[in-house]
Image (cartoon, rainbow, N blue to C red):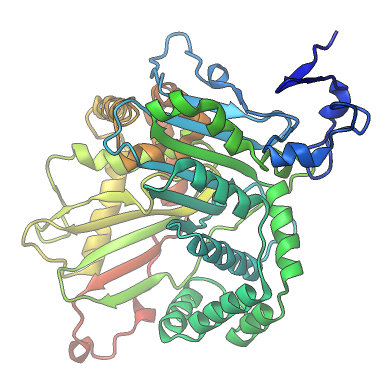
Length: 497
């Protein structure tokens, strides 16, 4: 039997099934026959006036244990401060890092990401306009939000300031789930984009980009502006609705533990407000694809006032956290190279070869570039591009031939475990921790297991695929005196590695 709910001194009973019946807008619902209050019916207005709303799920369900499982025989990273919550039948996930002793009690970090699972009829024009409109909405609410999108996400929203946590979440939810853009805002954003397109800097960057890709695949300046001008608010709302339904949504929150202890119900109820009905799981996910950038004319020269250096950009696609770690290890191997490599063909010159990814952590399903950059050691100079390339190839041969010390990879693993243990510790208060959580998400609990599972054969396969089977974009920064080049052109220096 259902017990009656008591409001003040008045008892009323309700039909539980109808009270929680889901409506299209998920707003407060009260069945006409479900309640009587002192002889008259209490309707929806009373509940809204008292700020009482009913939804199909008031708070998300904690599922931390589902992901925080120790694999037998594997080292495991214990993270009692990190909690994972999910909304059943939705694609919305919340990851919370509760810092026990946060330096600034009033500061917290929150990120909202729409992870790219692919949508039908994607549009760069609509995406750019949408980003500008969302950015404008935050500015109007005096919230400093960093918006960006990369190869792995549609939208990243990062907020870190001293404004009330609940206030920020409410505004963030409203902008995400109930966006209201005016025609005036739309025209303002269009003008911003068109002014950017007409700028000299943008035109120069566009010309450079055309050298890397097939220029015929790009819209002309006039076509791009026309597409912007013809976009309506209806187009934006329709496009955004498709994004919300066909992407994985994720909250990442770094916050003071004492705040959660005192405001847990309010905090999670606020996160849920208006969210769960916007991210229903779709069965017809459309997989996105992006072909790797390849270009026969892949050698580019830049004038440089400082010491010369050369970089190799290899297109990569990361399908899993395991792959991300493998490519990361490629960038860490140089840490253990204590002696600079000397090429027999380099005239005895020594070169250090610091290797780094263009992004510190590549998120799952992200396309990017693995960047290898090497700079002369000490006061040495790169006098010959050909010599520098030979040195680069020789070092790759060392890696591929397993000529490194046998314990090199194990040393990297130990280094990585120590690093993650420090940065994910419950008392470690740093923006880097928040970034790790945002990138690894629920797999953050399996970092140690992923690390243990990688061997040198994985490194070799990555080198073989990324470095030997793909043509890099080669960027050479060297001191070039145009009067000494004597007719030499870039076309005469095209290389393939």
